[in-house]
Length: 452
Ligand code: PLP
Image (cartoon, rainbow, N blue to C red; front, side):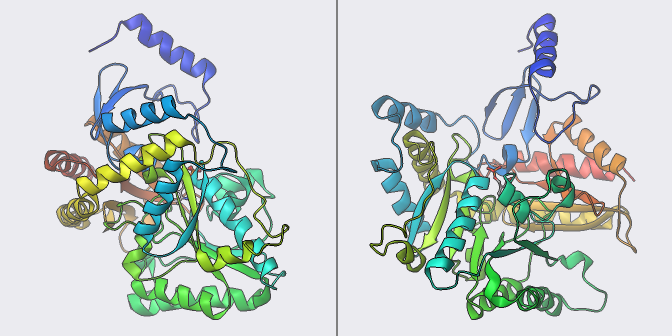
């Protein structure tokens, strides 16, 4: 239903007057959407326009919007017990930690925080303290990859490998180093995917050696780079990185903030590669973003270095809201829904179909590569297929606006500084219906084929 004109104007005006939007400048010609309600994969704005949310908010609303059971779980928990400082404990936190262990299929200790950035900060602090208490106090550096995004706080942003997001806030936390990630589409000509991925993993080993291996605390990576433009590694890369880390006593932190909780078709993205990380960070899909909650999961053997009976060896980190009882109750209900509706398998089914249907776009003169993993898809747009030059900014903006004009919200990712912010991304709710998927496919085909 449309609201009255004057209300609309004043809401937008008030928004512009009082609200500071994340990561975007105010644009009068394309003002922010004021979201009013949402159900399933569809959001409705304050003017009554409906859009399929092809990005699940910020890669996060895995079970879709409007789940009454989740709202009820939060309500019931808030009424009964709204808050517990996590210096103590409560039943939903304990049950959720047990459930996450089940999903990780190994023994991990669960540390609660509020956001993906928080979870990564905790991972960095834990890694440094672990090495100190393990007789390796000089290990303080972290290796990450260019194009990766790990969060907005000073440490997580230092781990991030996208210069444009960082340079105005530098110097950030010291001790963060970067190497190139595997980008199979742009690998050197004549090199096989296997050799290239092996080579990229070896770059990590080279970095460890050049930096003096006794100084490296951990490597942090996502199972696949998501926000940097859907860069999917070959299995060889992930296995080799783990092997290198193990051989050099370097911890492996896997950031599952986007890839966790069914997004890739398994509980966690790293499970596709058969690795066992030392630390796993998670957020977003943990509660499907109904309430803020994040987790840093630490392997039991590492935790044991903090549990020595010596009063100075515990982890000196606290946050007020982490492990909030209602957020934990919401996470438990969210995971129950995923189980009941078999959403991990559904992600595989939806993602396979999406990739199969859109792969044909590679025949289009400006589509360089269409790639997908689970229910994540990237369409890399290039102005020149031979040279793989990214399309201009204006082309990307036009495609995004046309998708929106046709009722589909899509993402745009990559690395702005290198000019590679040219990947159209899709990360729809895992609860999409077959009709929702048909709609996504039809809009993407229509918009891309209409822009030659
Ligand atoms: N790690 C990854 C891979 C992310 O994509 C994000 C956010 O998009 C973060 C960490 C940071 O999460 P948050 O925004 O909850 O701090």
